[in-house]
Length: 537
View 1: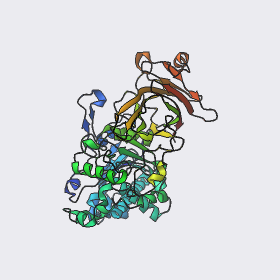
View 2: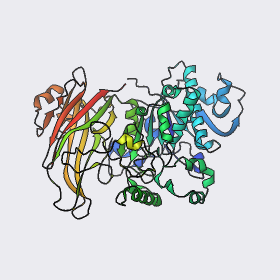
View 3: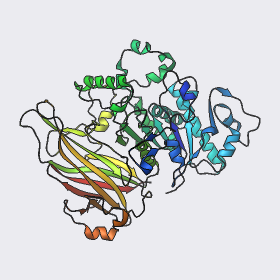
């Protein structure tokens, strides 16, 4: 896999009726990070998306922010084109000849581009989409001038920025059918309201009464929860190449009215105020797309330590763009061994959280606090017939109900994500990630306790890819790194098939390359899980 990354475009979210702060911000908020005062080393300060990418030891990026300008009125071509074609330097989205020559002297590979759509006029999503298509075209032209092979761009979009990217992909497809699949490699959306914003159900006359709303009427209209324009992604782009990052921490979002309105929408959907299920602004059900992979992070929509300013967003995006392996985790069988009220009505919920080795961030998060565990289950083998997630996400957000806590995919898929096998600490052996398992019980009648923990335990999955791949499951991390790290032969010698052993040898699935099963056991729950690890091209 090439160590030189593709060009990457960052697209920010909705700036509000007044975009003066956005037009004055050179990096559109992607230079904002978060301080974690209780941690040390790499986990202490997250510098922000742009700086972190530029400081990468394995795949460093270069800042190309000044290469392209975005204007409300057409610019004429300058006298000295520096060898550029006239079309590239004339219009509202244009290359600057001198800056292009200086910054792109080594080509476009590994460059970061900020898409400043808020500088364009009129303020309309389709206009923003056309501008993004133009930016990608300019990057492709620059690559051709430097004799580079253009493999497309990677895109990270926050909030409404993901809707802008959708319009850009559709604009490319309208100009040349199939071109978006060639010009765009992969897309990560961070809290994008793909299916709208739930509290946009308020009457039109009330929306029009909000201060400054006329300036941004088209942008507000794009949040319509009755719209199904998100279906059009499938016409122009493969949804498997879009990773939707879903925030779950509504409690930390600073705009309290949005959080309360999301809770009110839950009353309309579920007949209960018990759940919020949002990042504070965007519902979890809205931030996903049918057919697209997704991951949950326990971050809020914006502000400090949010979807756009937390390390999670950066690490997840980089693994999706550059990861060496795609990993899946599914439930083969399960058995809840305790719980169940003699009175009231019990419901069970199942969830996992995934964390890579040696770092203090998660690739995937489920918990009662996040309100995103799978369920509810009534059967103790978790074999209830839950609604199909893709079918539920295919509906407009305004459709009654929110049955989007079913399995992530067929065969009780729990999680699918990407890891980078080249990013290993010293003395580390194989690919390692931690899985935290959780089974909880809730009394929906409110007679018994509403938050019983049936089972909670963590395991460490260690994979050795290669000609004859092997997978092991540890109950602790003693032998996974540092001076006690075991080599493959040593791990193999210490392993057993007993799920209670310190190191368990996973069983390869007959006829399925790169897939294994392993068992977990405890007082309250026992289960068999299937792991797939496949090289990602």
